[in-house]
Amino acid sequence: MTVQMIFLAFFGGAAVWFGVVVFRTHSMVRSALALLFSQTAIGAMFLVMQAEFLGVLQIMMMATEMSVMAIFMVMFMMDPGGMGKMDMTHQKRLSLWAGGIGLLAALLLVWLPDWSPVALSVPGAHEQAADLGRELLGRSMFIFQSAGLTILTAMIAATMVAIVPNAEQGK
Amino acid sequence: MSILVVLLSLAAGAYALAVIERWAVHGHLSLTGPAWAALALLGRESLLARKSDRLFFELGPVLLLVAGLMAVAVIPLAPGLIITDLATGALFLNAALAYVLVALIMAGWGPNGAYAMIAGWRFLGQFIAYAMLIVMPITAVAMRAESLSTVEIVTSQEQLWNVLYQPMGFILFVVAAMGLAWLPPLDLPDATGELAGGVEAEYTGVRLAVLRLARMVIILALAGATVTFYLGGWLGPWLPPWAWSAIKILAVAAAMLSIGRYMPRIREARYLALSWKLGISLALANIFVVGVIALVVPI
Image 1: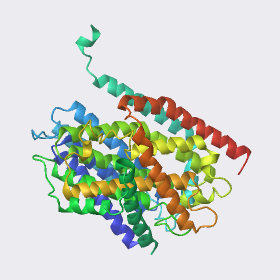
Image 2 (image 1 turned 45 degrees about the vertical axis):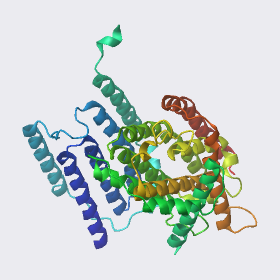
Image 3 (image 1 turned 135 degrees about the horizontal axis):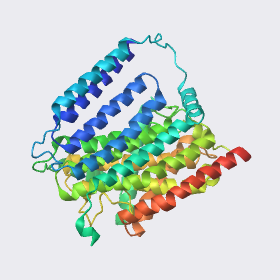
């Protein structure tokens, strides 16, 4: 249990540290990949907590997603390599307030509700994967399918909005 | 113990593959060739481009090697001879190989050179083409085995190998695997003669040696995955299981290395169009057919 706790804390710390790096660096690619490693560390936390399927899935999905995000950041930002020492933060007052409120909400969520005692035994990894499958294709099917469709629509819409129509193209 | 055995056979396999690649590309068989080439690389000066992103430049090849090794960890070579038999093995293989993309983007971005950078981002486009065609055939394989564990996938093929049970999935997977290992004709990220070596363009000396070794490990991991998912893994008559694994993996790797030599390099846009319009439709059809067979005639 204690070894597990130490690893959990280590990966949690790594996730937070890489999260900080996202804003401390000047390079868009570094920023995107720091976010990737932050998410990978969260995947490792799932693995430590013996949620094997979720952990592996998180580690897999984030590699792709963050790489795709990196190329969008490089395409649309004016200083992708960070040679001009661009600042990653903006709207500082608003961000501070939003971050503070978010932190407070997270802390309240940790302390206030009555969490049931820590589970000492978890179902085996085979069983977990099967259970997850039954959940996704049963009770939660509609929610997950509509979420997938919504995300796809949002991606296409966001890309279309980001492309500035070129006057030359119309002629 | 089995970790050591797997790693040693991986080293031997990588060397054998280097010999085979030399044979396939230059046409002469030399057993000591790769050793001399490796020694020469280790002795050569390792250049560092000016104003490079040093961290990514150094980490790229290493991450590539780590990704390959992680993928090898879930490939069974014989009953009990596997580094770790995860319940989510087939998914874990995907997760490990997703970092090939990250490593190539790092290696492409790192040296601050135009050819390398174009090549790195090109591989991202290539990833969009092959990614679904890796995952969807594996889904059909897992459907038959009713498990994601690679060991159970092999034992599920005792009656009939998957290459006969789902031939369409086999072809899609092998082509996608060649895309993942950027083998010709899908070698867009190093495109010799077009991008001057692409991702490899700015690497020299020890770093290039690591990059090449990592590539060999990835090809072996993918050949191992093909054998595990479609060619019955260690199953076979007369010979011991490990020998069957070795023969099959080397044969698949040799085939993947030599097939593309005789084809023109495919253009990025065409590859994407083919993968999405034809490939994904076929992969979906494959899943459907396998589902129907699994429900109607349980073999």
